[in-house]
Every structure is written in C-alpha cells, then in structure tokens.
Image (cartoon, rainbow, N blue to C red; front, top):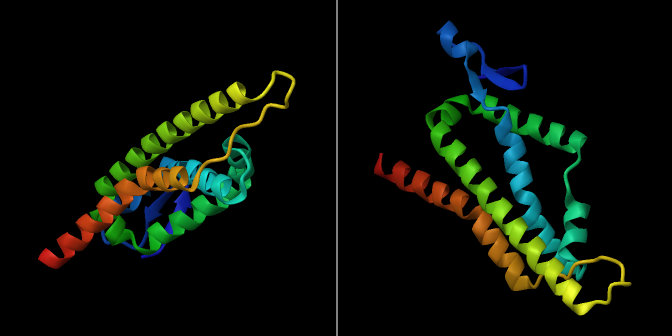
Length: 164
C-alpha cells in the first residue's frame, strides 16, 4: 500500500475502509525519537574510534533539522510501503522506540557527567573545556544499552513468526 503524507503523519491509502485511511500509520514523533536515540551511541563509537572527547563527538554527530526531516520522511515512506506489518506491530514499535529513547537519554547523561568530571579533575581551570574520550568498552556498552530493546523486539518477532 502506498501512503500520503498529511500533517506530519503517514496515512494509509487505497484501503477499503475510509476510517483506516484517516488514521495515522506512524506517529510523527517516532522517527525523531529513533534518530535522537542513536546520537549517544554514534558519539560514543566516534569518540572511542578517534580519541576525541564524548561531548565533542556528540556535537559532531548531531543530526541537523534538514537531515532529520529527510531521514524521517524516508522512515515514513518505509512504514507506508509496509503498512500492514507496521499496523500489526505498532504497539511493539512504540514501546521499543520509547524504551530506546529513555535508555539513550540515560547513557548520554551518564557519559556527559562522567566525561566532564574526569576532564575537570584532570585539567587546570585555564585549559579549554573538553571532555575525555570514550573507551571501546564504553562505546560497546552504550550500543548494547540503547539497542537492547530493538534486539529483544526482533527476537520476539522471530519467535512469533516461527510459532505461527
């Protein structure tokens, strides 16, 4: 099924029921939450790989408004193309997205506090404010914590598919 974009939501089109046509297929907040959830993971990986501080890596990987708009539209197009699958698993997608966003916010907060306190302890007040780099282990833990809900959802869908 194809969809049309109206007021920030994807609506199903071509359905036999008018009521289903008018319901949004994908909550307009979900793509932004998905993209924002990936920032701390990407920042930790970039920090560990390059040696730059977490805060600086986070600023470097932030998704701009134009990029977010384009990526959100692409996600909405994907959802419209697979509308029956999206509708069938909508509560799962919403749960995974919100759970990942909460985990990402916690990871970002912890890294920001930890890296800023490490650098303030180690540097004089006259040094430029920077943060310490993440270790590879910290980057891996960040990825696991933020992406765990997605992994659990994929496993649940696989198990459900095998049982049907």
